[in-house]
Amino acid sequence: MNLVYFGTPEFAVTPLKTLLNSGYEVLAVVTQPDRQSGRGRHISACPVKIEAQKSGIETLQPLKVRNTEFLEKLRSLNPSVIVVAAYGQILPPEIIHLPRLRCINIHASLLPKYRGAAPVNWSIINGEKKTGITTMLMDEGMDTGPILLQEEVEITSDDTAGSLSVKLSRIGADLLIRTLNQLENGIIKPVPQAGEASYAPLLKKEDGLINWSRSAREINNFIRGMNPWPGAYGFLEGERIKILKVVSLDENGEAGIIKRVSKDELIVGAVKDSISILEIQPQGKPVMAIRAFLQGRKIREGMRFSLTIEGTEK
Image 1 (tube, helix red, strand yellow):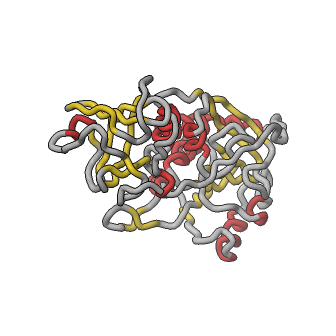
Image 2: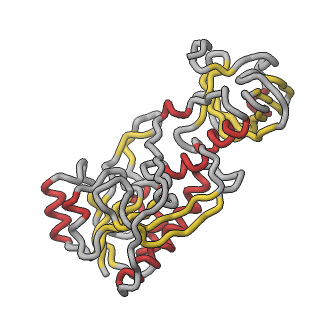
Image 3: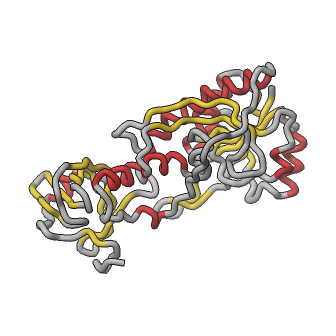
């Protein structure tokens, strides 16, 4: 069986490496164009491109997958199957129906829950206890195609979007190989999705603003679901501060108000209970433990985390 692999972020690297180690012929890798990133706005390649180049695989980076030249190239490769893992563009019918064995998508949720671009983040933000990986035959809808295989994964209280994505990537790689083997041997039966669907829309940088008028548990989930990107943040004394790790405390407080501060402790109230901030990142600074952050800063009880840089509530 030969295939073309569509993928872009780190999540898609492990499935690609596993395919290569399992003896499948990867004809080409399709990934997003190089982008500017970082404070210096340097042009950088995505993780999947870097991995493909290490393995000497032809890499295609169309600006739009509907591009006529790209579609002709894809047809000339004539893959038996196309595998898609967090590619980042919606595939048109011309691509979905091109391979003999269709297009297979590795999706990081138990479909039909959390269709869309950010299922890992939203499963944590919404306080889910479990999620998983689904391999599915793609159709023209948004993650609506029939299910091939699924595997469930527990979401622990320590999981962030980053750590959970790593776990799901590994499981997705193994599930993909099982899916391809069964598909090739004709022993897998696609099953239509059943149950209530939910959606996980794409996150933007501004979505990381913490709403302190939520419970401590909800804020904790939000911070973990936004870590590492886009990052949860608030404004303290006009300074934009990213908060990376907290623990919930069973004690009363006022929403967004610093309740208690010492040399190694910063407790902030929520609408219900409080949180203790453990890791923090001031703007333009590295991530630091709360003790390091508090050194040399005049943080006092009664200060407020606001929703705007001016310190006035929206």
